[in-house]
Image (tube, rainbow, N blue to C red; front, side, top):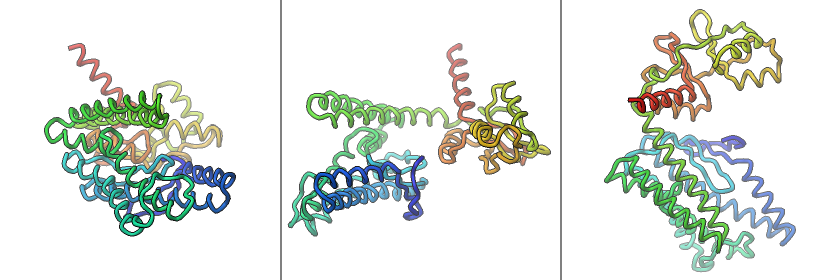
Length: 359
């Protein structure tokens, strides 16, 4: 995620904090400083950090269970709205998805229970206050906020854990896409209730409802896309009619090739062996920074993605997302067979759908 800073790894999972999280802490400190003084402002920042430590543990639980089920957990990023665990793919076995989804809320209930066991008899449980006036309020609010996080995440709507758990339960009895559609419908129904109820009583509920509605729709699109990609191989959607570049060409010559055709990204080939890839973004940024007389070999990406023609497109989609690269070289026995991009995949399915409608 852009504008995120790495802070090391936890159990092999990258831990990142988005820059907006620091802006949130700064805003809370400045607001508290002007209203209540430096001590209250400092306690408030510590309180927010404590909440987000609990969020981090919540997301870590999801990630470790994902690893246990054979998935790849890449990172955990803290944002002002919570934490995001970047997991390569959710397990499609219903029982695994149920366990993986429920572990997060269970962890927050466990944190609340442990805190209550040690300090709850003294502090009690309370609705969290952004500016706790005492250590007792601090711990009472921290217990309360963990209970709230657990309950909120159990709402049966995507992208909350409850929505994924509901899909897992439904998928025990029906097709995965049907289960997703049914769970999304329930979630979006709840989100509309939140939106309309919130307009009259609490605008926060309206914002939550909008967030749920968008998140549910995105999940449905993601599942449908994966189902379309599954079973189709790279060789079916790759581009075989393309222009390639020589490493010694200068950018002015590359621009001529770009003007003459539809191609934005180019493989760089010498002696029939691919040396790198030059993308449209690299071309545009290099023109701005270094001019049009720079050679291709100076700016090409030599750390490019290479794929086998028999690779499935659902795997390609995950590779593109993980590498953040728009193009891959298709190589077989050391020979460049073609290139594949997200655009070429989209074009393949668009043409396939058009042909299907004509029959």
